[in-house]
Image 1 (cartoon, rainbow, N blue to C red):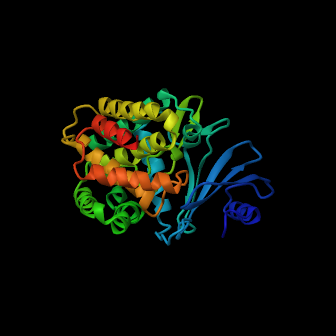
Image 2 (image 1 turned 135 degrees about the vertical axis):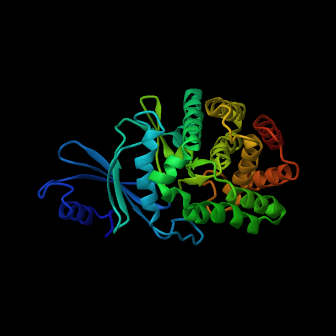
Image 3 (image 1 turned 60 degrees about the vertical axis):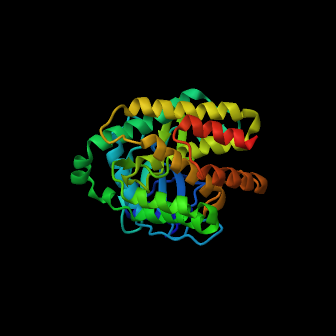
Length: 339
C-alpha cells in the first residue's frame, strides 16, 4: 500500500475505520524527506493529520538501506517526548499501524514555516536559536536524570540499531572510508560513542526537522531516537549553523554568533548534571565529524556546491589534527579558516 496514492490511502483509512465510510479527504504529498513517504490530509471535520510510511531504501544517490520498523521508534518517541518538553513542542500521536509501518500524527496548524528554509533565506532569528538550545538541553537533562524510568517505560530506546545504520555507518564510517585523512579521528569517535549511554539522543536534531509556528519551534522526525551520547545531537545540530555560516558568507558572523548562543543556551539549560564531564570537548569532535560527513558522507548537504564541499572538507580535516576543546574556539577556527 502506497500512501502517496490518494485512492489507496483513503481506502486504507476507511477500512481501518480511521475515517468515516463516505468521508472525503483533502490530500497533499509533502516533499523533502529521504527516509519516509509523508502525506498531509484534512478530514471533513477540519482535523488535519500528517501520515508517514517508512521506506526500506532511502532516497539518496548511493544505496542506503534500513529497516522500516524504525517507524515504531518514532511512535514511541511521540509517546515519551511530551513528558520532557513544553506543551505544544511535539505533535500528538494519532495512531500507529505496526503491520504497514505507518503512523499518523497531528498536523502543525498553518501558517507555519520550516526553519531550514528560513535560515537558507537569511532569516536568522536568535530567539529561535535560543529555543533550539533550550529544548535540547531540557530533553538531555530530564532524560539523563530519568534513565531508569525510560528503561522501565520505553526499553526499546536502549536498542541502537537505527542509529548504527542511519548515523554511525552512513555518516561517520562511510565518511571515514572516503576521507582517509579523517579515518583515525572518526573511528576513535565511533568507538567512544558506542560506549556512551547518558541521555535520550534525538539523532536528527536539525533545522529541517523544526517548524516555526507562532514564533515557537515544534520538533519533528524522531525515528533515530535512542539512549546514547548527547554530544552527537550537539554536533549534528551545530553542523547546520556552521555550514550555513560557510554557505552564506554575507551572514557568516551572524551564524557564528548563533552557534555560540546555541551552545550557551544549551549549556545553561543542562546545568551541572552529574554525567556532564567533558561534554563540550566531545561535542566539538562530533561537530567536526558531522561537518565532514555532510560533504563526504551518504547524505551531503544539497545546498552546497562542489567548491564549498571541497573547502569544508579541507578545513575540517585540518582542524581534526588538533581539535579545539571549546565550542567558541571551534567556531572561531572554522570561520577563520574559511576566509
